[in-house]
Length: 244
Image (tube, rainbow, N blue to C red):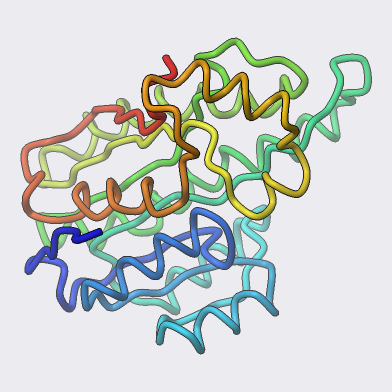
């Protein structure tokens, strides 16, 4: 497959959260392929070091649930022109098992860090009068998917966060958009959740009956980060093969 190259991304400072594996790793690889100055955060040190060695991206170990550590990591990266708020975990859980501590931890894992990462990069973007923040949502709540209510609650909130930040930051030339992936068949998804029955049902629901892969999402992130989308903000882009 021959894909677009974006001259405006060459040398651009990019930060990806949750970049060591899955969709995040593909996002890192694609930005490196564009010649962007790419850094990524993750708490998976082994996978992070492996990806950094393979791509030349800068890896900083960080548990994004620790906001002080997140702020320190962003400061260590330096001025960021593109932030991809990717980190999340879609662990399944039953309604009856959720306690307040678990709920708070799921919000910290899937939502809270997106706001604080955006807050941390905003001053440099404001000074530059330009920037792109890309928040990763999920198709799960749009499909009324059950079995993980804390996750779907957090992911539905990404849309409100995106539109609010777009309004607050647009006057500085900073764009804020959301990508909504469908079911992306990463290694983790294949190992934990993909059964023949669930895959067949997903293919039936999609207009294009092919498995979605991480690069399908990464290429959307490239466009939203590049100057080609300079007047696109406060929007949500669904990459799901036409399932909703």
